[in-house]
Length: 496
Ligand SMILES: Nc1nc2c(ncn2[C@@H]2O[C@H](COP(=O)(O)OP(=O)(O)OP(=O)(O)O)[C@@H](O)[C@H]2O)c(=O)[nH]1
Image (tube, rainbow, N blue to C red):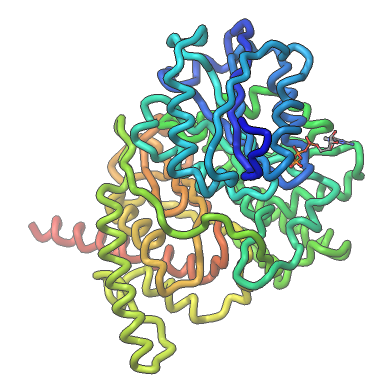
């Protein structure tokens, strides 16, 4: 790396080898033919580097590559800091420079190539590779979404790496201010994005706040990402089993299920804490909320980094039922939506037009209509909506609902960052899991339902400008149409 280089550059630092102990949950973990990648994100000063340092110095035995993404002159300081930790001396620090300092901007090109080149190196880690594990520490101002998407979906990389999870370190002292800081209109609050994408939140700096502040911080976090696991820490000291090898995005990612199952219950509790705590300043919800419908957040905006819809739509190999031919579908749907929107505009109409082929009867039309009916959600607020259904869902219809939810957005103000779900699918004894990052999603089958277990479908959506009433109306319409179809089928069967 050139010292004169004033372009901020993310760097990769290979580190020395350590003994590899067995992982406690090896029996449950999927067979590792790929190198897991954990994204460590969090706002400026939250404790990300402290966490990475803890991981590197722990006796886990992995050979870990750390990819840092810092801005400006900090890059040299940060990387030498990590490199010079006790026990890490002598690392054959070869630096991988990326031409663009912001990882979320460079993510589609240089970053993936750099990762590839790291993984091509031979070494002493499992599979003859140089590394067993990769940590990506984002900058404090990064949106982890594009990085997560790229890692999850890049089909070339898929044979070599797998996105294990997104760990967001939160500064318990400053989170209130960071989440609610007003930003220019149109910009996104990156602290909210970082919480939105988290699979686990490390709520750090316990020593500097009291219990009441922690409860308030947890309520704020859950207001954005209701199903997320939260672990309280001091100096980012956390049991590594909680943050590494989560398999959060693998086809066997059962670890995502408990948070989804618990989410509904926690929503109500979090909300009541939140309301209770709202007298303390920044965390005031703008309207009352009900269970499964988190309070609206204040308008917040900020550095909107690569949050456009420009994504590559690669399918996942190995049995994942990722929505096929998504690019074409999106293009088709978008052009239909654009045509509808432009027709509405040229008519001088403020009505939202139905999009896609489902016309007025589509759940998404209900959602678009709902969007016109103000839900009192201010622009750029990130929040969670959770949905459930006690009857099994028809898989194809469900996918169609998700297609429209994620892709028919041109006439809607919402942006869905993340969806997770546990599905009870009609005609199947297996649990199915939904994972979505931006417009990409997959539904995969998992273990069988236990006897006596309630086969309830639960979906969690995390996004910006979500209109809970509209989303719920869309869901209710989907369920209603499904039931109608079911009854029709039954009647036809009886006739036959
Ligand atoms: N009191 C206290 N200080 C902490 C704790 N965790 C981290 N710190 C300190 O907070 C400061 C920031 O920690 P870092 O780990 O560098 O935070 P970061 O998220 O990497 O920061 P950026 O790289 O600026 O985004 C450092 O001085 C840490 O020593 C904690 O639990 N309690």
